Length: 64
Image (tube, rainbow, N blue to C red; front, side, top):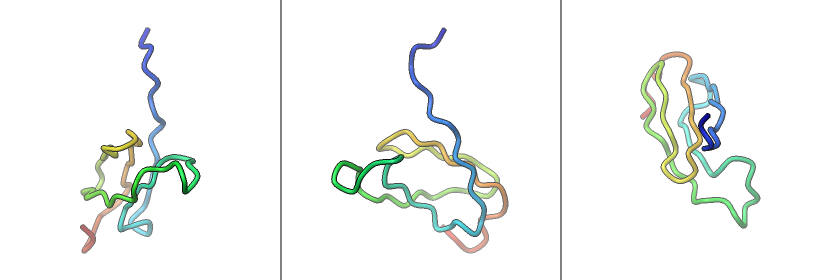
């Protein structure tokens, strides 16, 4: 059994772009800096600060 806690995948749509993360459920005073994540169409990306995993369901279009 894996003892490491895994973060659930957060599903987003092209409407949610550009994608940024400021930490999962953190108050402003204890969250990490807002970082923009360069997600590709129909793919996943992990936040380097907190490990949140985002899944883009759709085409990224003109967003970076």
